[in-house]
Image 1 (cartoon, helix red, strand yellow):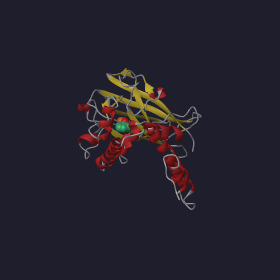
Image 2 (cartoon, protein in one colour):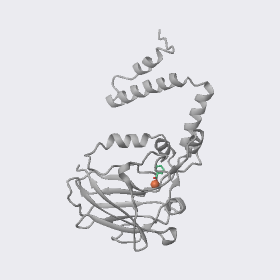
Image 3 (cartoon, rainbow, N blue to C red):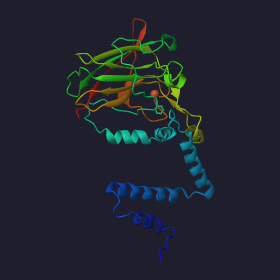
Image 4 (cartoon, rainbow, N blue to C red):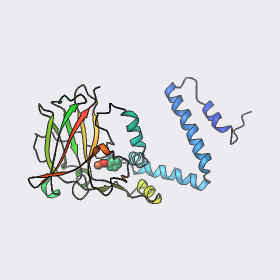
Length: 273
Ligand code: BEZ
Ligand code: FE
């Protein structure tokens, strides 16, 4: 007769996995069971604490809508998104480092010509965003698509204010030298949405909800691995405590100033497929 006592239980659950299950499903399930049981043995929850954990996950699911993904936010705030990103981007050392996509990407942002203004001027002080795209061996990549998005001076993305009116985002195509440039406004640091269960978790953990100011980039070129990353202006108060752990030293950029405009400049390098 089966004896599912405290010690035998873990192996009994692993042994219940069917022999015909997909090998990757078996591997993932066995590891999940082993780590979940180890976690429970480590923390020894009371029944009330375990019910609280189930209520937390229930509220996390219930907070999701077509424009709010609370589980991604949970993954981000626990550092899981950045760990998955790191495991999947063990790239040549010269390739620009990646970071999280975040929830404010819109796949059909307007394509604009080089030099276009992509924000409403009243949304912040002027910023020129410029740079180039090349291979890790230094060849300029003409025709690379550079998708750019960021929040405004008050820390809000267009889609948080009015999802019908896109601004602070665009895609631009690199020229024969691999260069691109758009005009925009200076973004601010901002809190991730913290009025739901992830915000409650951060509060209980004694953490703030802020991300340092940044500009998002998604860069695609035929024959190359597409790159999802940010640039972080230097001297932001939250660079050392990004709530989603997305900052990498190589992505911090000193801003410069030209013609009464702040300039964010960076040369990106893509790894080949
Ligand atoms: C963002 O940078 O847009 C972002 C990333 C992760 C969680 C929330 C926001
Ligand atoms: Fe962002």
